[in-house]
Image 1 (cartoon, rainbow, N blue to C red):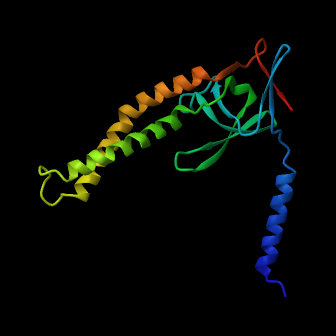
Image 2 (cartoon, one colour):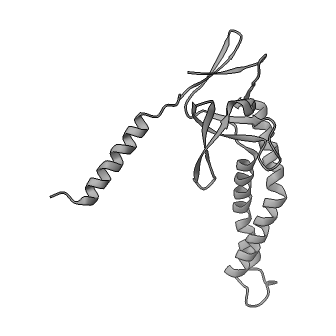
Length: 189
């Protein structure tokens, strides 16, 4: 006798498999300008400069290219702690596309905040064990408070500066494709 949970699991796996196998999206994206052609492959890192975006939306979006479907480009973003999200943008909202080792400014700010926070740990431990610490906060509590303060300070001051330099350097070293009628056009594979 088969357990009812096994039957449900079987049908869920079957439905997911059929959905995944029947997904109707292209895994490559072709950019064309005259006789020149550039193929963007599955999992390539892309950065997209958006046009006509309102203030609350970011000017740049990006991540790993997953495919295209119904005039939308699909890509996956990952946070510094591994959280993934699926994003998309309509082809008509793209001003430029960058291909290479590119990331969004927000991702780079998170990266630099983490790096600077890790660099503050030894100094925070040293300051927490200092003889000038208020009584009752010696050791670990003082180290945590000091580390938190310097982490927030680096997030507000130094991380945006380093992220801006890193973002501009990556964008400068990436291949830029201006999207438009007289420039590169997007063709679906």
